[in-house]
Length: 212
Image (tube, rainbow, N blue to C red; front, side):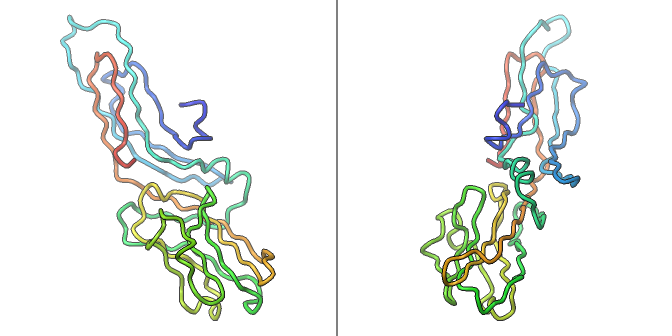
């Protein structure tokens, strides 16, 4: 794996000199606080390109498990996450849960942000503030209209893709700007099984998962 995998979030695995016997199913998982979550399933098919008499020593590198897997290890060990949410890519929507644990009369602002501190959704003084949203989340988020009456601060994210795999933070502020509550939610968007094909004996081959 790349030495900066936990920094870039690229958890790809490189398998050198693939053989026919390497064909099979590979799984990328993450583990934090004793909980294991599956991120991606990859099927590797190594094809025999040349007859035995035509083969020679070659250097072949195949990326087996690739994609935009967010750097969840560091964040999960630095901050205790309250909730894991899993959804399949292509789903209509997914809900990131957050229940108010403070006096609702003190709440003025609710901000949802991602690991890069981009504003996912902002609710302030009784209404949404779409102009403050990051463009990546524009028109894809929704909160309940009467959230401050029922105490449900959950966020609905529409049309989730693997790029949405991230750690989201729900922060609640009072009118003075003081933080009343913070909750972290880990979202894992699972991708369909990926099939990677490589010919045995090729000089070099690298397959990148199309979900990028």
